[in-house]
Length: 187
Image (cartoon, rainbow, N blue to C red):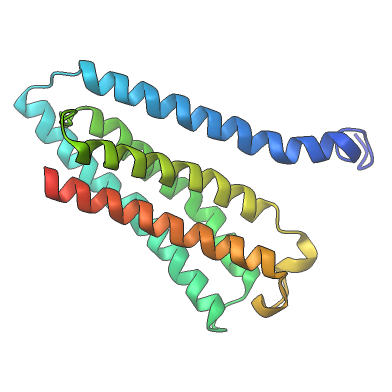
C-alpha cells in the first residue's frame, strides 16, 4: 500500500484516530464489569487468597512503579533535563509494564474477597476504572503527538497538548493513590 491510500488519509484516518481509543475504553469497561462479577462469585480459600495477595503486591510494584517512572520522566522534561521525544519513547516502553501490572492487580483482586457491603470498595472500583480509562486516554495522547513536535522543547508545544498531558498525569496519580490508600485501609 502506498502512503496515500484511503486508509491513511482523509475521513478514515480521522475516524480511526477516535475509534481506537473508543474501542479500548469499551474493552476496559467490559473487563472491569466482568472482574466485578467474577469477584462476586469467587470464594477462595486462605491459600488462594494469600497467593492472590502476593501477586497483587508484585503487580502493584510493577504497574505503579512504571507509572511513577513515567511521571518522573515528565517532570525531568518540565525541568529541562530531558526532551519530549525521550519522554514519549520511555512512556511507550513502560506501557507494557503499566498495563501488565494493572491487569495483574485486577485479576488478583478477584481473589482477595472484596467487601461489597462497604462503600470503600465502590470507591476503589471507581478509582481502578478511572485509572484504566485514563491510561487509554494517555496512550491516545502520546501516540497522537505529531512527529514534528516530538523533538521540540516542551515550552514550544501547544498549550492544549501540555494541559492534556498534565491532566492525564494528575488523574493517573489521583486514581492510583486513591486505590492504593483504600486497599491499604480496608484489607
